Length: 283
Image (cartoon, rainbow, N blue to C red; front, side):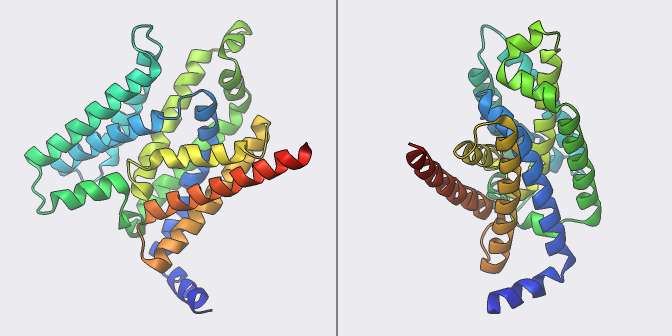
């Protein structure tokens, strides 16, 4: 009861409600595209683009931009397009392209912060950016509104192009043969992922973003087989884990991003165990 009363007390503050709203929206968007990335064996695109976002954030900090989203979002989207194009190159495979962009952007961002930063706590700034910080608890109404608008756009696009995304995910060659513009939809997926990653930077940090994309999808695949069922369960589980993680972090005083990822890991372990039991019973 003491914890419940404490939670009720915290929910009276707007910044806590803002954090819950943004966390749910980001978790929902991440889970929708996470299934596609896992099935296309492109899970680590989240790492590559999150490191690009880190580099862009470092440049924005050096330039003292009041709204770093103006710089971070375009650079991350452009990198997503380049990553897609480079990954289709016969000389540079997809995983190599991700490694190149990921390591290069991370090193460049840290170098820029070291050379040009005026902060007295550079290590703290870097750690907060990479692993998430309390910034999710200091969101302004404008940032929440922007997150809500971008999240709604992502969800609408996913619903409108669900059949095309499904076709490109499972058999890209067959989709091309039937007249589907697979390259255009791959480009659309890459851009949406870039938007989600930029939104998730404040929630879990750049190094933990892939967890939001991968864990709910893998958990759902342990229990369901159809694309639609996996997507729906992944979305529900991702939202539940995000809510639980934020609430636990507020009550226990733990880092928000790491707590959410820890809850995702526990959920995966439970789903994996349930899948084994379910498989054994079906035999």
